[in-house]
Every structure is written in structure tokens, then in C-alpha cells.
Picture 1 (tube, rainbow, N blue to C red):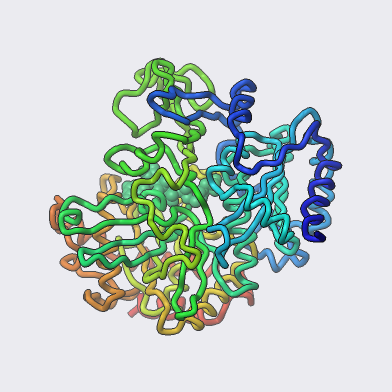
Picture 2: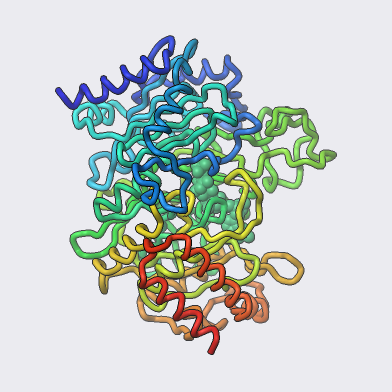
Length: 586
Ligand code: GTP
Ligand code: SPV
Ligand code: MN
């Protein structure tokens, strides 16, 4: 009973602070009335139900279309525990500042209380949360992205063990926008944003920032990784996790359709998750992963029947579109890259009239998104509800690099892999506010999402490697985004990426060759199958070329970056960096 009070007391406290007109508990049922209400208020547009059954369109505020990293804080008692990778403020100061902002923020509105579960219900991997919000859009998105049910509500009440997620769109003021995390209190307070990772608190805020902190203390990993199973012609399925920064290809790789020649041989791909993986060492000593989410919040532009037919099938029903073009002709949606025939009678992401044949501006925001249930995906892995997760053979890291990083290379061993992942860089995208195309180091694709000092995070990774010993997955780095002198991508990408994963898995099985290079182990161009692919050998050679001068510059940036962690940076990683420098200067 005492456990039940924890939830009740917290909700009563929030009601007193936010002063809503009424309180509604969400258990996944009866959401149609909420949809109607959102339509009446103009928060949702019902799309053509014959073409897109169960689909809706939402436009967020113009200044609120991506994660706001500069407004995101980790509030630990000691500043050093948040690390140079995070904005920090002392918990009592942030609580005071935000209490003033939350005070009366829900006057005239309804407060929704959403108990939810991250991960299969009842799995030892899973964690519970409760989000309090005044946004119907958030309720409907959380209902797709997490597990919400009467049983989950009961679990939350009975255990009293949940992450407290408080959210209000308040006035959407940019100046007073904060996404504040209190890892020591299992709490998240987010105010003045209604967008994606700022507002759906189960996702980046909980499943990465709070969970990474819990994971360090409890001996597991919370990572910005997709999880896929690759079934070979013998019917064996090997699982791979891959971490790429935001808008760098996770969803697309997770939903990959094998090239025709691979399909003919019997290859199949199964998607377990497209954004977040929680990884634990199993009883057998191997690394096992679950996807804590229950849906996909994916980048829309560029999604079409050639690049990602699985995604297109998935978003044809029961999907919420955010910030795409509204096609007035047939009440459907459109985005750049969907087709060569944009609507002439459109409304763009800003809510303005837009003619796709004459306008110079993009109609859909580059970070426009779909929210769609996992169960819609044709290649959803049958293992997705397995409480024990799936065993991981390889960990793949990667980024968006025009030059420098080759198509693929392998770490010599686990510690070298941690070094590669901790120093990987990528060009920024529209998934976060700020300039696009700026190269920055994004360790493990987690720099915006690690809820504590990344020096300690690297040490935790090294420690996990030691515990895994010979069972540790092999570590690789990939780059689908290398460009030639004409600025065009050299590698066809998308489904063809399976060719690279084939080499990766063959390496894991000890069945493929590699050459030793200063940066790591690399395939010869002949080791990558180009059967059925029109790719000149020179291009593959260029894709695999390592420019020593660029890498010497790269090591200088790594050194600066490592310095920022002071004595929290494990010595092993400094040694790895010196090793790379020595090999480059040979
Ligand atoms: P988040 O949801 O922000 O974490 O992004 P993500 O990592 O899931 O990226 P996503 O798969 O949505 O891809 C982002 C953009 O990269 C889209 O515009 C894709 O079309 C493009 N993209 C994905 N894979 C490839 C690829 O293999 N090659 C090329 N050239 N582009 C790709
Ligand atoms: C990302 O930016 O990595 C996303 C979208 O997956 S968001 O939910 O906004 O974080
Ligand atoms: Mn992501």
C-alpha cells in the first residue's frame, strides 16, 4: 500500500504545483475522445482515412522542431559528475527555477498522468516511468512509443518504483525552455517544448540519460543503438547493434531490405529496434540486448519506396506525422524525397500555403518525423518481446563523414573498439537545433545523451569489456556518407549496407580476411561482395582509402577532446591514442 502512495503523493504534489483544471489517467484505452479533442483544438489534423487509416498530422511550433541541446541539463550534486559533455546546474537551483515556471502552468488545461513501461512488460531489463503532461500530442505519441496498459498502471502502483517525468508545454517560450534531468532522484522536468526528444520523456531523457546513469550503477549499458538480426541462408540469425548519431541512418539500417542477390540466396533481416538498446551480460556470459521502445519516431524526409520500403509500409496506417507537408488535394502528406511530384496545393511545416512546383523552400522540415507502432513493421523480429533480449555478435559505430573515415574497419580488440567509439566524429544534422554539417566528436553517438561524466562512461565501457572477456562482441566502425570529389555519396547505402554487415559477421565468425592498417583492421576491396551491384572497383578503393594526413589532424582533435575530461579519462584510452599516433607516424 505504501508503494501506491508514492504515485498518489507525487501526482498530488504535481497537481498542487501545476494547478490543472482536471486530471486524467491514461491506461491506453479510450484515446479516441482525446484524438477528437486534439482535432477540435487544431493540435491534430485527421488525414484521409481511406488512404491513410488511423493517421494524423501535427505541426509543432516553428521554434520547436528539434531537440534543444543547449536547453538540456544534467543536474547532479557535483558538477564533475555531469562532466564536460553536459550542461549542468545544481539540483536545488534548477528545482527552484523550474518550480517557478511550472507553478500554475496547467491552469485551464487538463493534466494527463501516463504510467508506462520501457521494455517488454515483466522483463528483468525493463523499467517503469510515469509522465505527467498537459499535451494530448505527447499522450498519443507516448501511447505508440512505450508500453501503456492497465497492467502497467498496476505494476507502477504496486512497485512504486518509477522514473518521475514532469512535462508541460506551458507557454512554449524559448527563453524558458528547459529539459532538466536529476539522475540522483530518478526525475526529469521538461518545460516549454512540445517536440520529440524534448517532450516524449520515455525516449532520450529516460531511456538514455537517466538509464545510462542507472546502467553505470547497476552494471549494464543504455545505448543509442539499433538492434537487427541477420538471417543467413542456413537459417541462423546473428544480431548486431549499431550506434550512429541522430539522423545518421539507424532507422534505415534497422529496416533494411537485402539486395536482390542476397534475397535470392535466402538472406533475411529482422528488426528488433531502431534507436535505443539496453544491454546486459547474460547468464551465459554473452551480451544481450532489448529495445526499450514500442514504436519508431523516425526521420521522414528521404523515406521512399526505394530507400526504405519497410518504413513506408509501416507508416501507411496508425501513424502520427509531425511537420511534413499537408497535401490539400487529397488530405494526405508529402515530404522531400517521397516522390518527384510534390503537391501544388500544399501547406508546409510552418502552416503556410506551399506550392511544391514553384516554392524555393522545403515543404517538410528536415527533422520532420513519423511516430508509428512497432507492430506495423513487416520485418519486426519475433524476438522483440523476448524478456531476455537477443545475443549480440557485433557492435558497430559510425558517423557522417565526407572524408576521413573509411567505409568500414574493425577494432583490434575491445579496448581499441572503446577508443574508436569514444573518438568518433560526425557532421551535425537537423535532429538538433543549431548549425548543420559541423564536424564534432560524438562518442558512441551518446554525447548528447549520456546522463553523467563521459570519462566515467568510457571507464564503464572498459569494465564491461573486461567482464565480457572472450565473449565480448567484436567492434567495428562504418561510414555510409563518404563523398567523392563531386560531393556525391560514393557508397549506394541503404539495402546495400548488408554487404558491409556480411563482412562484419564473417569477421566475427573468423571467416573473412582483414589487413592491418594504422587505424585498425580493414577489408581488401575484394573482401566486400559487389555481386549484382554496379560499383566500379576504383570507387570501393576510394571508399576504403585512409588518408594519413587527415588522420594526423584527427588525432590532434582527439587529444583536445580527451583533455577536456581531465583525470576522469581512463589511462588505457590515452595509451590507445598514443598507439594510433605512433602507427600514423611510422
Ligand atoms: P534519429 O532518429 O535522429 O536517431 O536518426 P537515425 O539515425 O535513425 O537516421 P535515419 O535512418 O532516419 O536516417 C537519417 C537520414 O539519413 C535520412 O535522410 C536517410 O535517408 C539518410 N540515410 C540513412 N541511411 C543512409 C545510407 O545508407 N546512405 C545515405 N546516403 N543516406 C542514408
Ligand atoms: C534523435 O534525435 O536521436 C532522435 C529523435 O531519435 S528525438 O526523439 O527527438 O531525440
Ligand atoms: Mn535517435
